[in-house]
Image (cartoon, rainbow, N blue to C red; front, side, top):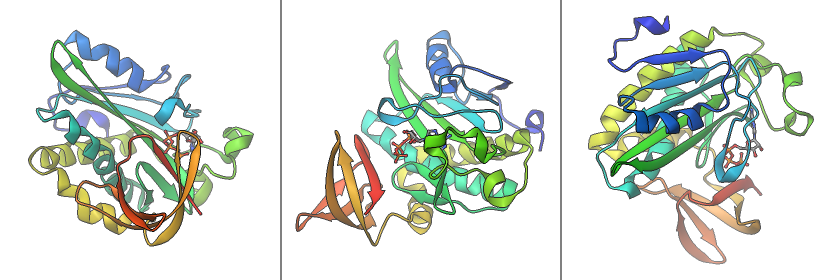
Length: 250
Ligand code: ATP
């Protein structure tokens, strides 16, 4: 589906190359850009991940951010990240016939490799809360286009399935699923919980939790109603929200 056939009021801008779709949209939030505005790119020169990490963004990938002005308490914004993960799985299923797995809290995997990273950032402009939901997806990226240090852990649709996809079609499906998810999320932040639990591969297994460089062994049991990870850590049950935590399989 071409991007211009989407039925939505907010514009979608697709650029060949930008610094970072999230950074640019955050700048545009103060310029009166409308709710739902999308900036997508075929390449980023300064892609960003969580916790100050970089996101490699070579040509072949799809880098897309959406600006939202939710009317909700700031704490609720955390629940958008897992909902974006579910919306992306739905979009990739529809547009590419593939169902990725979700690694808690914010990565999509294909064959155990990282297919997509999600970065949700929020702030206020003139007292109004805004949120930028950003994602980088390795669609037609050739394995050789990943830097050496990511070749074992990063995966693309092309690398895993041997097929290429039209970026515009994938972007259109993603935008439709994000719009539908956001409409549902505004009335019920737990709208994606059942799908998140079904797609999440981080539960019922030993894991390592990493916070500020300190690793702790844990057993991940469940995802609670606010999408926090329920884990046994040092003999006690903890509900771990995504904040500053990274997770690895033990
Ligand atoms: P992690 O992936 O380590 O669990 P995270 O989910 O917090 O952490 P993100 O913010 O989603 O990480 O992405 C940043 C990390 O993803 C980088 O530190 C790097 O390890 C990895 N990475 C960077 N670029 C890509 C890419 N194009 N594809 C897959 N993985 C990438």
